[in-house]
Image (cartoon, rainbow, N blue to C red; front, top):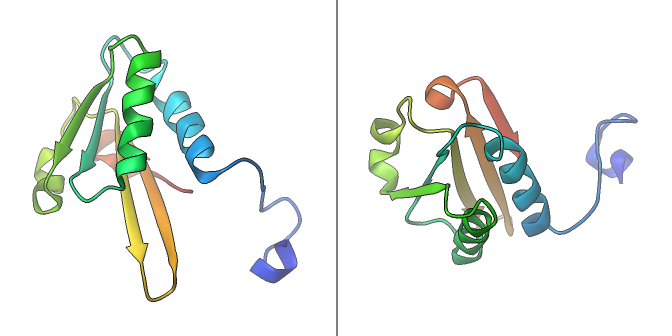
Amino acid sequence: MRAWLGLSRGEVVVYNSTSVNLFKILWAALSNSGEFPVLLTDQVNFPSDLYIDQGLSSVLQGRLKIRITERERLEKDINSDVTAVFLTHVDFAAGCWYKYLNGGSRCSELCLCV
């Protein structure tokens, strides 16, 4: 698979479903991030991804605050309270989707693409 992707050894890992990986990444980003972590997402996120967010909130015993905003307001809604930003981009022409999880100060330093 790595050759097909044009990558070198050690640059690709394949396991689990996208949803399971998303849950794991969100868990890692949010579980030790303070008393009440905030996850910012937008209204056009896949419903199944929002279910994952809600499930994570349940695992975190309701400590996770999920803020759903309009995509046009996203940049304005990123502030110091936001622990992570999670977005889905669908490219129907290519038949694939990308899930973005971003965190940190104004969410500009770290971007994970699942």
